[in-house]
Amino acid sequence: MPKVGVVGAGMVGSTGAYAIVMRGLCSELVLVDKFEARAKAEAADISHAVPFAHPVRVMAGDYPALEGCRIVIIAAGVNQKPGETRLQLLERNAAIFKEVVPNVVKYAPEAVLVVATNPVDIMTHLTVRFAAEYGVPPHRVFGSGTTLDTARFRTLLGAHLGVSAINVHGYVIGEHGDSEVLAWSLTTVGVIPLDDFCRTQNIDLSDDIRHDIDQKVRRAAYTIIEGKGATYYGIGSALARIVDAILSDQRAILTVCCPTPQVVGVNDVTIALPHIVGGQGIMGMYPLPLDQAEETALQASAALIKNIITEIEQTL
Image (cartoon, rainbow, N blue to C red; front, side):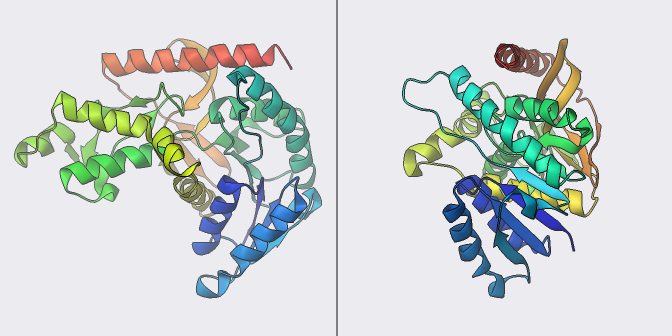
């Protein structure tokens, strides 16, 4: 079985590692962190769960320990300081990635790189740029995008409809953040269009209810952070799902983010759209036939991210 690396042993990185181990997706998992003691502690803690799950060797190490990894998750970065602008935060995280990415590709040149650091759309865009300088093709670098937001949407809608979230097929696209777009017009329950399902089951899905679900999806991170300080279980599981799709060459459709030549008239921007994810990373993307309101919202989301990308690239 393959080897997986995680760079950044904070809550997101370590929870992602734990989820991967619990699912038995690899034979070896290595944690790398600037703070060696943290990486060693997380590796030890996760390894103590191995007897209750799958025989995975969990260890901590420096960048050379990434040698042979099929996938490396990059969850390194810093949090926003009081009074710090998002651009200033981005500049600090960009500086970190300029150091991290070359070290990752030096020791794991064939790995698929999965970015989890926020703001994930911009950090993914920069990672593709930094990795390309060392010959890594763009299809092997992408971010978690709105994989988690899509799960939140399906969970909340499934609860309202009284069906399993697994049978709700709907996507959240665009920015992983405030401007994301819930593609209501394309959502189905099984193969049944959402509106038809609600009509036949006498379920109220008024504009007010849709707005409430929309806000709970869009504001989920804020609500969770207010209550417990950080979000990590959801994204950790999302990362494990992405790893599974790659290692099993599932060619799964996931709303990950990667640079796209054009999104609703916005050129060279990185936002989340449904992509086919398989053994070599991104294997294809298909456009969604959105309604006019959703398309307009997606264009605004793409333009917002493009403006930030342009700003941060001017500082590099």
